[in-house]
Image (cartoon, rainbow, N blue to C red; front, side, top):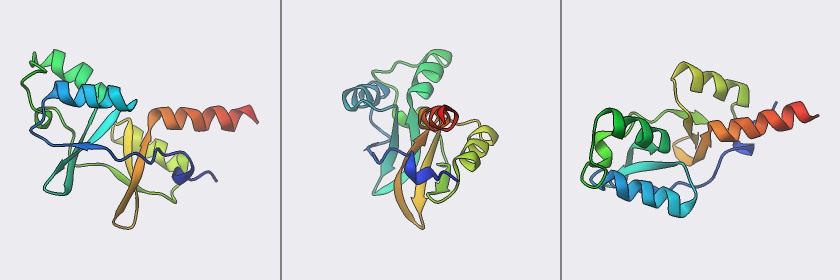
Amino acid sequence: MERILNYMAESLLSIHPSATILEASNYMHDNGIHSLLVEDAGEYIGIITNHDISRKVVAEKLDPTTAPVSSIMVFPIIKMESQKSMEEAAEVMRDNNTHHLVVTAGDQLLGILSISDYSKYLVKKFKK
């Protein structure tokens, strides 16, 4: 059984909820990532993804230069224990209609598992 821990990205970059959507987008681009945790006063309160930016900004006619991250972030954060299987992760993603899971070990956040990470797992699994 393949575990989430083996496929997650260990990056836990974050942005403040009052930052603009444009700042978040630039930060993701500069770091080569597709999601950012939203952090306020040392606590992760949400997540913002490229998908949120591309879909919600246009649909809601938001100005990314002024609209805050908090206006499109997803909360609460969906978490999964690092020792869970990749199959369980796929079920949670499907059931919650999300492409990103925050990976934990107890109360500690370890990383993020994305749908892209799951795709890499599938390629490896069926290549055998």
